[in-house]
Length: 302
Ligand code: NAI
Image (cartoon, rainbow, N blue to C red; front, top):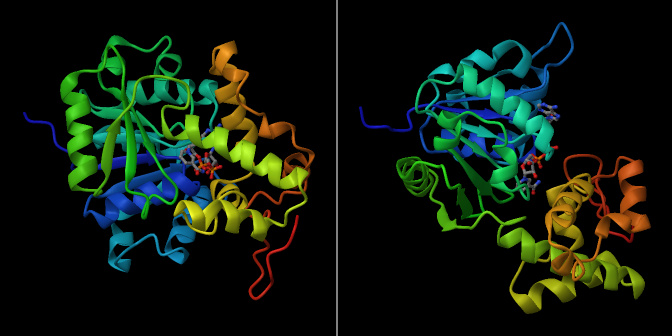
């Protein structure tokens, strides 16, 4: 039977997973969205909270699309992936956590169901270490950008064992259901956009901090002249989540050959980044980061 995407499962209901789930629902595809379990009396709370944040952020084009999304917990409801044609993994950027989840998904998924990871930086070869042959055939990286509703780019990474029809199916669904522009990437650390993006964001952020610019000055300078929104450096870090800096930069710098790593600055080492993380000011998904979130308050230097 011809493979088609009739049902999707998204694992991880954070900034990206809930946004990706909303995009499938906007495209008319039923989705189950799972996250870690909440307290005993409300096990689906984390996934539901992620979905509600999407509603507030207008992740749905039509509120009725929200009805296509059901929520659950990874602990109680992982078997809901059994009838999914495409399972998108969007949990924390940690290869060990992702691989452990893949082994469980491999045991539950139906034959031929696609599994993809939304990793920002982890090479496919590392994600599929120890995986079954069948899993490798059906696995790709689908790297969406934040926010998934508005960013049209999707990087697609296929491995040496990925079946050509798996990559073709994902490409077709991403283009037709989600309206994405799909770019094929080789399996290199952080692929294309983040390999470049991490580099220029580090340089720009570190220079701005050293020269004592305000966040608004730095974002205005790095944004408008280059045709990107005013959220160029610090606004983008607030959007991405400052808690991702150690994970994304750590993973990228750890994976690069020494000659390349030498050109990259380690944003993780910046005391201000460390302080914001320690204070829980990790960006838009929390109580603000470089910019405050209180209505009417002005952005200020962190
Ligand atoms: P997030 O922190 O907003 O959400 C991660 C979700 O994973 C949370 O809801 C959390 O409950 C869940 N989680 C944490 N530990 C877990 C575990 N042990 N098992 C299962 N679930 C667990 O993170 P975000 O930003 O949504 O990132 C998810 C993935 O997408 C990461 O791989 C990240 O690198 C990637 N990504 C992030 C982008 C961004 O701008 N934030 C852009 C593109 C990719």
